[in-house]
Image (cartoon, rainbow, N blue to C red; front, side, top):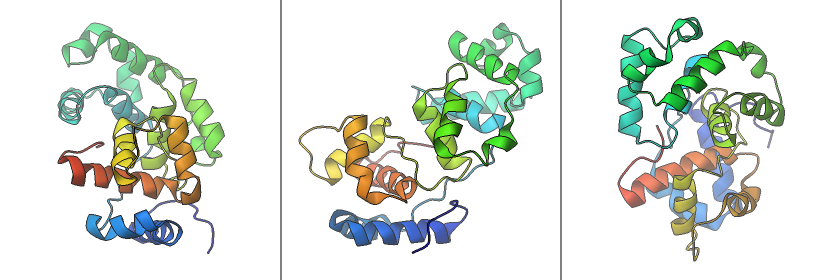
Length: 210
């Protein structure tokens, strides 16, 4: 089978799911229960990374409410964030650290178009050099905004918990343990992540990611 290039549409998700079912009997048993896995693609660029930062360590509902207020105030683009004060951003619901992070990212002058052609490791390194961007946030950006097929946000607690239940593990795997578990899923680990989030919703009755 040809190596995947990008996850662009439902056909790519289906190809990844078929691969998971071939290489792992656990996935073969679980995938039919989950139905069609969501694409979860979004436009790349500053708004996508800003949404990821806003979503750090708060609920999906809270992150959505803050983003809606920023959007209504015209504060979702780099130029607007450069001009905004921290107090203005805090009044819209951002914590002081996140207000500083977003202003710092807006000031960094990242070439978002160039990121599209960077290898995964280099793109992650570029993003994690920005204020407030850790590996989890960078990997979420690569998966959802750039459509990278083999990225797994192993630090995500919902993914870890889904893997624990799905594979009947004695405890929630660490990020390193989850990466080891995921090695056979290559080159479609980003589809596996979507499957784990879907399984988390199925098992827990709530979303693990937007």
